[in-house]
Length: 483
Image 1: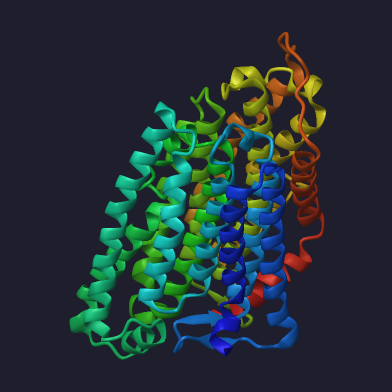
Image 2 (image 1 turned 90 degrees about the horizontal axis):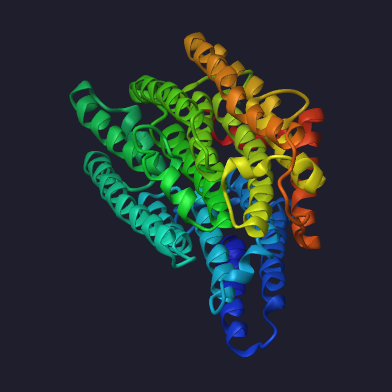
């Protein structure tokens, strides 16, 4: 029963997903289904909270699953992400006629997979959790069933299958070398490895990095992002941009900091991640400059943001007993989740009301819908990295980690890219506030969508002004990597 207890948050989500599907078959009034999904998310978050209250942290299933500060941090983060996505999609989801319940059930199932990824400490468990969340996301990407949505889902699943094969190849290499699928067993092997195994270890490391880079949307494995974001339903694009990315970074932290964190190969993967970070920042920001579709702009923006997060991943440094690189990644992911979900919530409202994702249609949005325009503008300011937003604190934190790890060159690259990004973010802000609106009815939204907009904008402001509690939570979660 102890194992089941530690798997409780994921079980609650899967039970809620099953309940949504079953009630979808018998209920004539479907509007209660998203509220049932939210109830399941609340139950999962409460169960996660009891781990702290009861002090029942530990491992389950022979060490394959960990309930520690790291997995608890991501448990709350993923619950919040799923809740905001469901709230912001309540108006938009009305177009899923005949598939209304399935949409919310798939969000719940995918979120359970994300939580499992953050807690998995075994290569087999990681692969199972990755497939649980990936299959749900492949289906969600094609949920509109039109030409673009079908194309997006097809590209996503084909490239996802290739990345999974590469990841499995790296896992097989690592298992063959270490004789273990558990991260602590791999770490013990790396600590005692002889120079003769270095080349094979580096090869396994590269294959695994390539497999995970697809989920993180890192150059040169980012080619799926703009097409999938454009073709997928807007709430799904929001979920992919935050949930999928955060889980990918969580599992990479687990595998590389915990399993491959010894001095024997840590410099190799640190330099690899630094190079990929620089390439991702430049590629994402430069191509975003010429976009005319808001979802494609956010897609390329997410590639650049992944590059900023990689700066912290490359900063393998421990300062004052804190895994500074890891904690900066955790803080950035939480700040990015609030910011990007707020931006996508605003885009979802505009997309649903206008039936368009063209940036030109955002002209004069501040007069047609002040709350939507204010939320999008504030989130774009945060993505740029300007005060007093969460994005500003996140960049300062992650740049500090890189400086402490003697990667000043990477910080210079990141700062230059932040200046570059300001052009396309602030261009949209100027369009919303300083252009005349076109003819048309005011943009409207339901109260749940208004809650999602308000919570996102308020969260970005609060974290930007009072970052201490989130920094403390990130440091506590990252302490699992301090040796």
